[in-house]
Image (cartoon, rainbow, N blue to C red; front, side):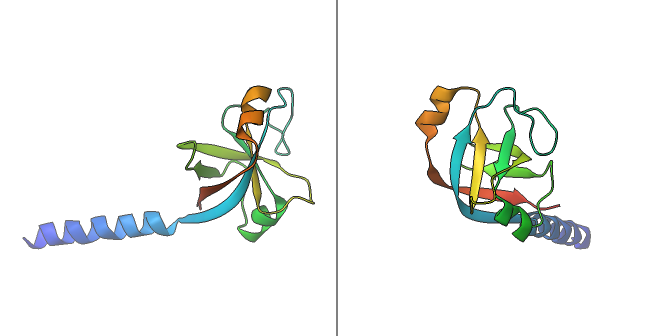
Length: 116
């Protein structure tokens, strides 16, 4: 019984720590589709690329390669690019086609930062 209680306590502690490593934000989300684009991190764009505005990158001390959960897409994206200085509180999501980008437009979405 004592061993089972200890295991339960450890499991609860782990789940609390996992949740403590996430930050949820409501942000603007736009789309881009430049296929030959080299990102600010030096990588080529791909289906997991996401760009971040400089204010969010600085405020949350975000790093290249950090994962972002985009709830509306139901997937993780990887921070690989940086947006222009004038743009605030925004993530720019890479899509493979201009049609998809135009359909996306500009939206308010919830993203979850996976903090290291």
